[in-house]
Length: 110
Image (cartoon, rainbow, N blue to C red; front, side):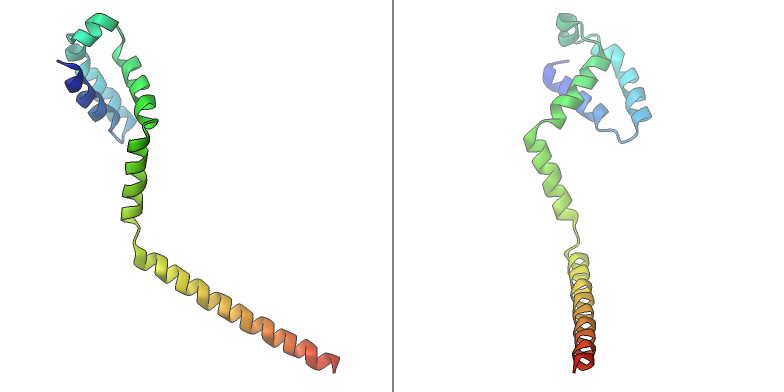
């Protein structure tokens, strides 16, 4: 197993949403990992590789940018526009009520 294949497998493992599924996947992969040249040279435990990989990949700006872009792509602009419209109506009503209150005060003053 070469480093590219190791990386793909580690990314698959750390990509699991459920922590316990991730641990089980790592445990299942460990015998194969220990046969790799990387392990034979570094003697790094798979748990250390996973911990350091999570940090390494979390700090990759290109992946962060991809995450931000994916998040932006999933925003429903109709909902945003609806919220903005409702805010506009609310502010308009509040302005009208303030103007009415000012008119009452003006009449009281006179």
